[in-house]
Length: 249
Image (tube, rainbow, N blue to C red; front, side):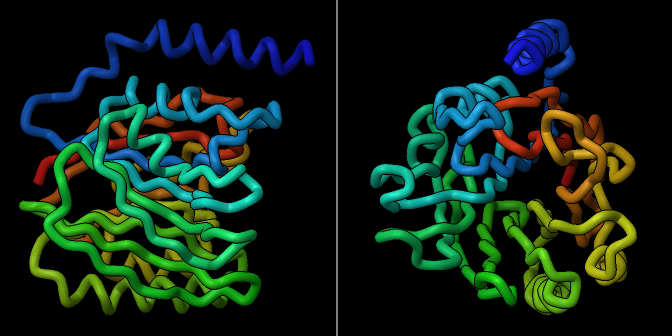
């Protein structure tokens, strides 16, 4: 308990100390990724305000969000992405992966501007089906995904994503919990058609004492440039660290 209290205090101080460094350059797009684990923190408390405040402080234009219940008995019938959308005043787009406990479980996207179109594609996973959500905006496509825990399935998923991306007529930004370290087979497939915009040498998981990078923001376009990749010091709100990058299109 004492260690957890220390982590919470340090997180508060870190956000306070780096507030002035969170400014976004004019003309850039701030892309964020956050596996929120249904807003259940490492203190085992479900706190929608806590995760929403992390997003609000970051001021992203788009957010890829993973591990979201919708209307399940596990989370008392709450639509978790909607709770975050209401608190951040962003548009929400949900993509269920499976039916679960009276509702659904999946991923989603939050955005400042409304999406022009949406597409969802199934992805393989031996333990539970996965999915990818493609949102079209004026100048780019944004893909959110959460890949399998099994490497062979991740490699297959990366190939599926590659084939989908090849058919899109704007720059594509892909973000999510890939469950893959930088030397994973899936990352080798992604490297054939994408560039990593964030820093794969910086760990994102587990949130309290991160020791490996398994979450990424990548792009298929040489015209998309990443600046200021940042992993936020948030050790309690979820089991993953939230992170973002500012991009120019």
